[in-house]
Length: 283
Image 1 (cartoon, rainbow, N blue to C red):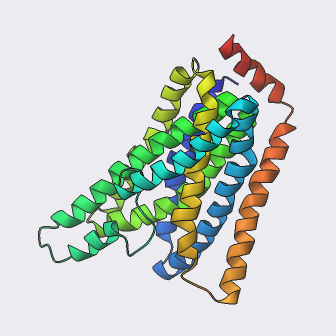
Image 2 (image 1 turned 135 degrees about the vertical axis):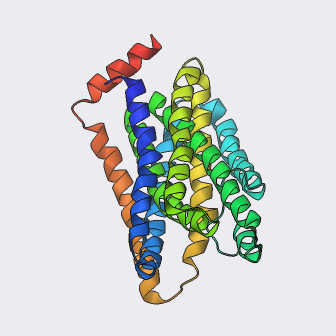
């Protein structure tokens, strides 16, 4: 299969389909929805960390000489700091906590009879998600250009963390005054930037093979940051033994799935055809 078609298909999986899957949660009663979401967050944590440490970082180091190891490690560190700054500026992504400034703005403007504060908060989230999804598309394409199986597990990890995030997006958009139909439409449009990022990266990254390890390092930084800074803190709100054991089990399930998929993808019989198309693109 053509590598570009694979990138389009899996960026759609990580973007548009994750939004549609998340929209199914809106059909659940609110009480059930609040119970299901934390389980999805726990699973996403395991998936993100497994892709970063089992897939992206090892593949990045395989692509460079030993003399560049320190530079690549520095790129991972700088990536973590960059994503911290971007999140502070509300550009990279919105937080998952009900006490952050984005949510406080929504709550504090509830008395605005014109609803301008509500709509503004919803619009900021859509813009931030659009930019976040665009970068996800670039990262998925970079992974595919390096290794097909790495691209597959990277896109699955993106989808895994996007679903619980998109559920939160829907809740905020609805609270911001969007109807369910408009919330779904605008979220789908924002998710299309994943495909756009993947296609643009496919054409622009082909002549930048030496830069691919650093794109993979940035991808690892983003996944680690999302898991550690955004998702894990939300799990500490409940500390009882039963919930803690469920969280640990689901995190391990996410790790196990990604590690297993990484191994299975290596043995797929069609891998030779996929790599033939990949090598053809670089001849």
